[in-house]
Image (cartoon, rainbow over the protein chains, first blue to last red):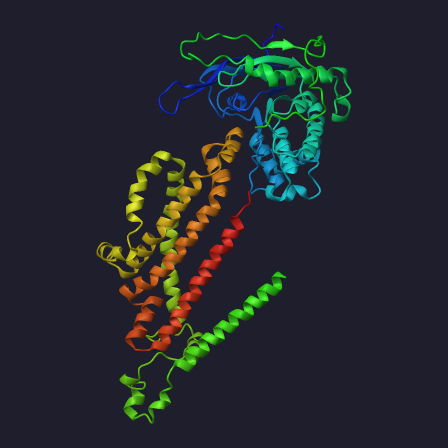
Length: 310
Length: 276
C-alpha cells in the first residue's frame, strides 16, 4: 500500500516510574501497528500487558514515554472529539438522563447546532440502540448495565469520531446481554465507515466483531506479536459465525496464543537496562483460516466462551 | 406498610410529647399552694422565693399570645417575636451568603489544584477550630458596628464547612467523569460547570447545610453579646426580665426556625443528589 495508513502507531513505549527509585517498569516497548480507515480492530492480551494504556494514549488521556501516534496525517496530542471513547464502566454522567448524556456529546461535537438539531441527532442514535419509548429520560442508575452501555455506545457513535475506541465495553455485562449488544454493535457499525479499535478479553467477541485481531504478549515488556486476519464474511451474527469453516481455526489460534505463546514470547525481564532495545517492526500477520494448522492442538475447539478476564 | 410505620411513629411522637409535657406540668409546683398572695407578691410575679420554671401550659399560652401578634413594635425592648426572628435571619443569611460567595469559588480552586490544596490547608486547619465568638472583639473594633460584627461572626463561622466540603467534593470528582469532559474537548470553564459542579454538588450542599446549622447556633450567642435586636437578644432580655415563660418560648422558636432552615437545605440537597 502506497498511501499512509489511517492510524499509525509507531514504536510506542510506556514506562512507569518505579515506586522507590529502582528501574522503571516498562509496560510495553516499541509497539507498532496500523489501522486502516473503516477497519474494526480488536486487541487481546492478558491483564497487565498494557492494552488499556495503549488505548489511553490513543484517547489522549495518557502520554507514551516515547514513540508517536499519527491519525489522518496529524500527530495525536491530547484528547479530541475525533477520537470517541467508550469505557468499561460506561462513564455516563449519573446526574443526567440517558438523553442528556447523548446530547452532552452532540452539543460538544456540534456547538453550532440548534436545540432541535441536537435532539434529532441524539434520538437517531438512541433509536439505533433501542433506547427510546421513555427509557431515554431515565437516569443511568435507573438503567440496567446493558442499557447503560447502549447509551455510551449511542453517545460515542453520535459524535461521529474518526476513530472509536472501545475499552472492554462489554466486560461488566452478563453473557446474554453481552451477546445482544455485540450483535447491535455490529449492526450499527455496518451502517457506517467507522474505524474502531477495541480492547476485549473475549476471544469469541473478537472474532465476531473484528476485521483484524492484535495479540499482545504478556507484560512487562509486552509487544504486539501477531495480527490475526479475520476474513469471515460479513454481515456476521453470533448464530451463524460458529458454522463458518474458518471460525474454529481462528479461535484455536487465538486460544493457543493466549494460553501458551503469549508467555513464551515475552521478553525475559532479566537485565532490563542492559538489554539492547530491539526496534520491532509491525506485528506478524497471520490468517489462521487460510493456513494449515493441523499440526497444532485442536482440543481447544470447544464451544465455551473463553474469557481471560482477570 | 411504610404508611403504617409513619403513622405509628407519629402516634408515638405525640405520646412522648404529651407524656413529657404532662410530667413537666405535674412536676411544676402550683403557685396557689403558697396560699393567698399579697399585693406585693402579685406585683413581683409570685415573689422571689416562689420563682419557678413555668409549666408548659403557661408557655403555650404565652406562645399563642406572641404568635397571634408577632410583628408588634413597642419600643427598643418590646418587639414581636416575628421582628426578632426577622433580624436574626437577616444577619444569618447575609453573613452566610457572603461566606458562600467566597467559600465556593475558593473551594473550587483549592479542590482543582493540589498545590493550592496543600498550601492553604494549614491556614484552614488553624482558622477552622476557632470559636466564631472569639472574633467578636476584633470584629467590633475593626468594623465599629455591632450589626456588621454579628454578620462577620456568622460569615467566619459558616465559611469553613463550605470551603472544606467544596474543596473535598471537587477534588474527589470521579476521574472517569473528568475524562468524559476531556474526550469531549470541554474547556476548563465548561468542565467546571457541566461536569465538576454537578458531580460535587451533593458534597457542596452538605457543607452548606452544616454551615447554616452552625450559623443559626452562633447567631443566638452573637446577639446576646451585641444586643439590640434579634432572637438571641430577645432570650437574654427576657432573662433579664425574669420572664422564663418567654425564655422557654423563644428556645422553642429557635429550634423550630433552625429545623426549617435545615429542612430547606435538605430539600435542595435532594434536588442535586444523584445515584451512581
